[in-house]
Image (tube, rainbow over all chains, first blue to last red; front, side, top):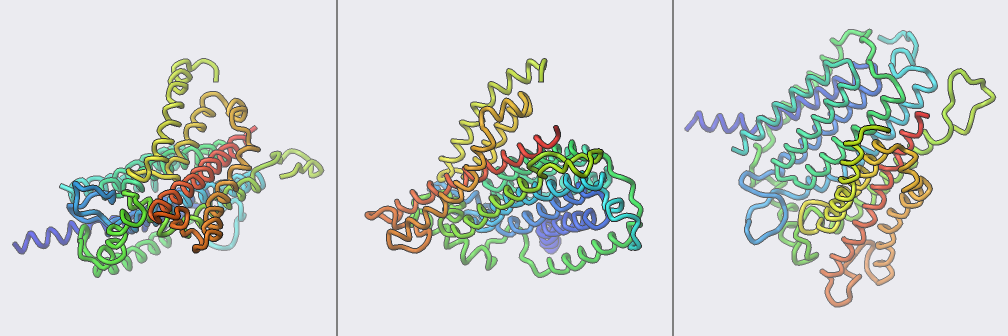
Length: 124
Length: 186
Length: 139
């Protein structure tokens, strides 16, 4: 019984921990890579990990999608779904804005590498 | 069973993420990003977020990929090898990750129905939606009616982003080899 | 894109169904998964597919960019306009219950439909406009 509880604890936490891993990966890409398109992809990963962070606590085991029907009694929480739904579409709009900036930077400087755009600066 | 499906999808997601970090060819990164979005959409549907999963599949794997590819077409497809050491960024992200994992210790476990989040406002929406709006899909009724202000704001944000892209990219392209006089209206 | 016979035939077959599916997602969004955001993106994806196969110029003949530039703010206007109408009918901003004098819940349903139409218009035209701008930049 003791072992079963521990297993449930680990399985229940796995969602959070992999979300944290995705946040770490996104942050790492943004900070370490100098290519701007790669940075934007990292930003998207960061953003999608937040979707996971919001939606996974709203899930109820044994529940179903929040569409009311006489056949079901338990539904998952609809509120995080609403918040994330709008976040996704706003996310793609901001991604497009970022890409537009990258395209203009490429036209002005001939490069999308942060190191080359800034020049061989003194910051490490 | 629900745990198992979840676990497999999450592991796939981590594998794709590691591949995205390692690959230097941006074209491959964008394609991997599409795979990432589809996995994320499946995972969201497995968590009962059908509306969100549908949007993620259409937006993340469809529109985002197209936009990233067209931006790659206008720029370069290879990432230059890094000049800086990766130790500092790695330390930063590991520190952030440790702090967040420490935070998850107090969070309710996955799938718990008795958390504050699932017992107050969410449950209230589920109870009242049919009576007050006659709309069975609670996500739609909350999105458009109960939280209509939010959605109006989001629509305005999309509109603004569209205008921003137009301002940045519409007009003739200024080439590097042209003289300063021929600036165009960029 | 000359040649690519299979691509051209299959995409021509697919696009009407994509648009039909978008309408289904839009109007069935009250009863199943879907709504203005999803339908808008699907509409945009259908035209992006057309542009990828038949070229940007052919697509811009079907939907000129000037039309899109009108449609983007129009969607926001429809959304905010519904709010102003409910204001005029004596309710709060975006209080759809005012739209039906007999049964507020029917008014709510009508309001949700109108607002989703506004969202559809803005999302689809913005996505397509952004695609046009990126694709038109390369030449």
